[in-house]
Length: 137
Image (cartoon, rainbow, N blue to C red; front, side, top):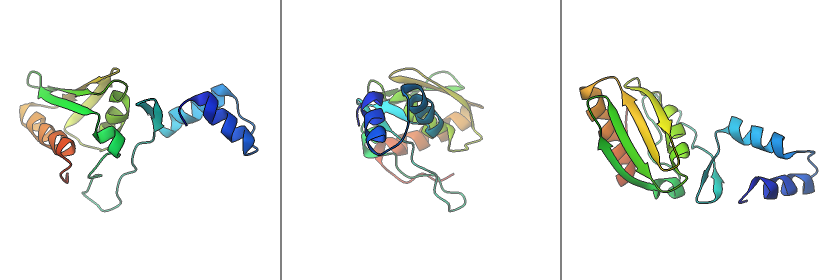
């Protein structure tokens, strides 16, 4: 499915009474983000204590472009056009106490950290995502 209208048509074909606004609201509740013209759901966290998902979906992983520190409390993550929201949602759902919050645009994410040391820890985790290496809390 590439758009909400296509998804709405398919749901109606399957017997569901939906509107564009209900589809939009449900996609938002699910945390879906548009990446490369398609909707992508965030990967659910693993159940093992202390572990975070080791990879993002291949489409989202391929959209990571650059990860750089910006001052003592900020990290800038650059992505392919339209992928920033999906990655920011994934970062937010990790439960990393070192992350104060994220702000996502279309292709850029600002990740606020609690300090320089924690910024270094988060940089390592994000760069591991970019390389596809396992990431532990």
